[in-house]
Image (cartoon, rainbow, N blue to C red; front, side, top):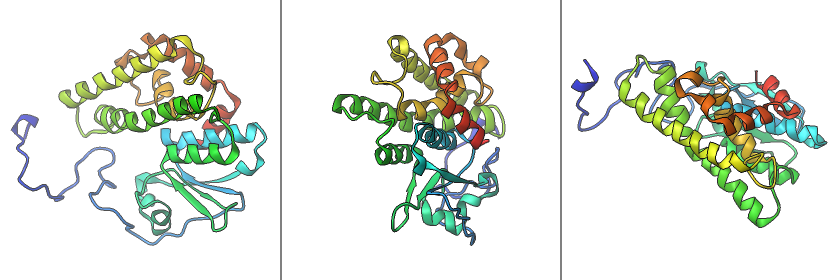
Length: 260
């Protein structure tokens, strides 16, 4: 059956896998699929994650905090294999009912505090350590605006463009064109914004950069979806300059190494 022959049913039902890279773990229901206790180490922060763009955000954040002397940002990293469905284990679902990585458990709190959603984790850690988040109201508002821009925009890049360009069972012209157009629009938003500033915020390097770089910076540098040529990311010169600047940071390099 070709794409043009498909007519949506009156009521959608889940009667077969959708195909593609993640078909074996995608499902339309929540909750655990199996009993699985999570490992717990001795460090203040327990991080349950994988080296995806969202996972990289948190290892970079923790390494940046450690680099400026925040010793209570020390962490144990526990790999969650999302390809094998470990995010649906009972222990993981207890920390994150949405079954997505990354998740942290802050053992310095009593009782221990779990935090899920990558940008919420960045904000939590920045607040806790009074670092990488401006205190001035105007600067803080700018930083949070870009933090939430990333949170809302990445679904078009990852779940949209990345899925249909890289992971779908076969190439489909309409969705690839649709999401390539939106991804390039977002790159242009960043390129224009970065024309007169070093980092995302006027106040300097912040959680906004940490949130945006693993997705858009690494996309521009050819490290996400192998799509740099297809999207002509070299033409976004300001994004390229910023992406290389962030990548060169010690904390970013350490965060990448940990995530891998």
